[in-house]
Length: 318
Picture (spheres, rainbow, N blue to C red):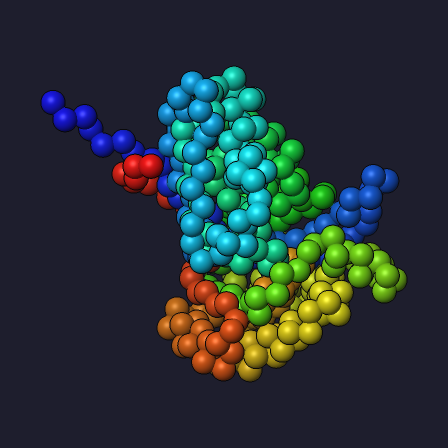
């Protein structure tokens, strides 16, 4: 009798987008306090896991592929955030490590859209699904991996405060309103370290900003959200621009696009974005940007209202 094919669980690790980002203070331990409205895009990395136990004495297999795999080539598998997520959840639940993790890397590294954090969060969601872990387990491990990982585990439109660990999802009506938008992501392919941006901001003597005044979390009027977000900002933009001169060029290119209803830099940069009400407009804008700047990375997709789907996919040998 032929054995059934071995299956892996896979899901999208979506790009994380900061629609606004205010630095509201600093804790005694040096960590900055933030206020941000975060959404997730239907563009990202692809992560798969084989949740079955790795053979005794054998480490978890780690497959790294995709257009930005080379940027992580010098990182040992055990140090990759996705592998650390698996190790942390297995330890918390008292389970053996999974047999294999596959990371298909499509998001630029160090680009302000949470690629590594979203990969780790995807691993937590996949293994949590397979192992029956609770939301508290996933969040506990996520908080130990980095400030962006808890929000990436949630992977739905949310207001984020604290150092990133306080995540308040928007109500379904508001999430659905954002899911009616489409995003164009643009990155000049210049890696930008978040600590470097905060150092540049401190050197410039920048202060703190109050939390943004945004609509109630059940507001379904996307126009009201965009007006409020337009009155807010990204407190890291000036520091990021000082380190990467291509950022103002990308912002200007996005600002000239027909049909764009909102543009800004995400996170600590250097990725910038434009929002559109129609997918066709976003795709046409991507074509224009790619033609004018063939060395830049671009991607388009809808904003997501909920968690990405978990799929079963055949495992490859080797």
